[in-house]
Image (tube, rainbow, N blue to C red; front, side, top):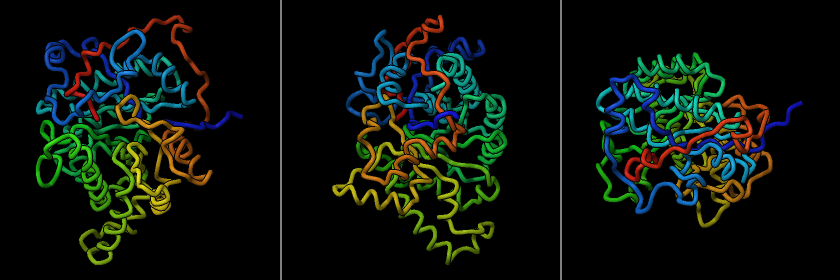
Length: 382
């Protein structure tokens, strides 16, 4: 009997390299000239990625699969890394949907070829252009059957809340392919999205970073109230890197208002909090750090964290978390569920990987590191 995974990292940023070989000729010049092409916005005073995560052979942090296995997976004995890319999610906010569609298709093909073939410990996120749900659904059906693609991923920045029926073709295709849908921050306020807060634009990166959870609250509120989980009962929605401590407040407020306003959402058959604990999953990084760690434990208990929370490191970003230090004092059962159990169920990773590659050259392969020019400071996803 195969041993079950002990640690699954639900947010690992692999740098996506030159997509030119995977693009139709009509889009190659634009990619070379402008890359994602919607401009930078909020960024920290130093690079988003850690300089000590630069691969031995050079290139961008997170750009060399062999180095990532050695520097991150082997160092912390991580069984699986759920790859979430770098600098590509913002493509959904490009004003040209045809260019955006070409980029996500190229990115998925590149991920399969340059990452998923390297080690069974890498599992991919399927990129789509959320601004064009019909084409996004086609891309999900094109790539979603690949055994190492384990979720659909969208940018959390959007022109409208994700529960609205405009996006339902994405959820229909994801449910059909048996894939969860995830969102990741970093592009709020960029491209064709609205301001990152209801009151406009923060002044600096710290303010922007502090307030990102309000966008996650917006999407989860929308998904529940618009009846997405009634229409797509097998769908799971993953809120990556959006924090945790805000969820009890949202659940309580939604439940209270449902009791008085349920006639406005007659399609809902249970309390909003029940839809949330059944269909929403959160990741730990960046985990809140109260002065009293027991307060965070209480919040974990309030949201049934053994069911709703998955560990993530956010490697190789500046604020990434060490799996040995990140979690508060939890019961053994809850900690095991957060470190691996919930992710194993969600992504179908019920046994340890069949091999533990530390060097692709053992397979007779030679990988070139992804040049750092593809990940510029102002263009990185958070």
